[in-house]
Image (cartoon, rainbow, N blue to C red; front, side, top):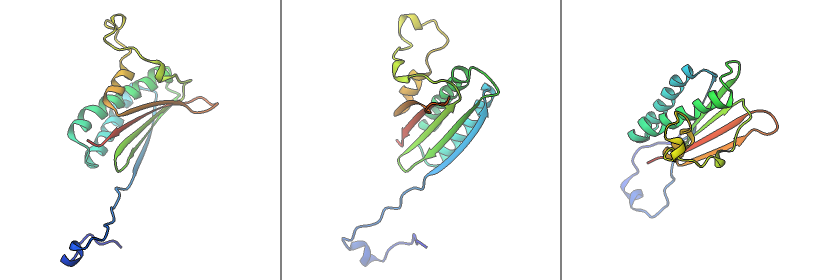
Length: 163
């Protein structure tokens, strides 16, 4: 068993390399029905994981909830077309340097890289939709979209580094 007690004074003065103890990876998974009423509970659970893991307050209270809510909304409304018989899977992994969120629906998918409009574009100013990808990109360090092979299924991966 590894002891976390202080090293004797003689050891602290030596030039021997110290071993870094990496933060263990925590992984949690939720599967929800395609119902927007299910979003809040998952967002709250992931937010609490981030707080417990020591992410900054701003990241835990703004970036994570908004980006995850947008990803879940897109998966439910666009990916699964609101079909309650389809599920959305959320996997949250807390790594030493980052939070990784995978949101997977059962839809046909889309190419997130092809979505390049901004909510400031003249033809988007009056719309009530179309800001999800923009917000995810603005609030997270990396957003990746991929289809799950020949079968139906689309995943949006959000990555956020510790501040």
